[in-house]
Image: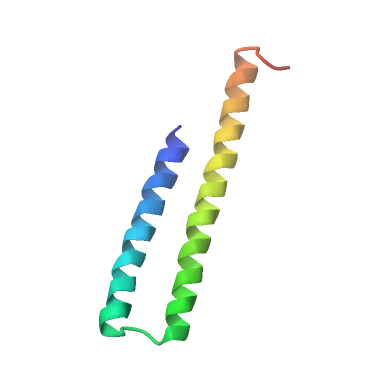
Amino acid sequence: MKAMKIAGVISVVVVAIYGILLLGQLWGSWFDWSMFVKITVTAVAIVVVVGLIALIWQEIVEEKSMKKDKYID
């Protein structure tokens, strides 16, 4: 469960930073559009990878605890 909380916090931070950059790009043209697209792809990749790692970690820990409690062999 701790892995999912950490992944949630990381995802929220990435999305919040991206939201600030998005507003800056729309109202102030802080970056070239090609750079902004790269930032967008990077932000999406970070959120997806962190989510996948958290899900895999949760499954490993959950399976370990189920083996410890003798629910599975």
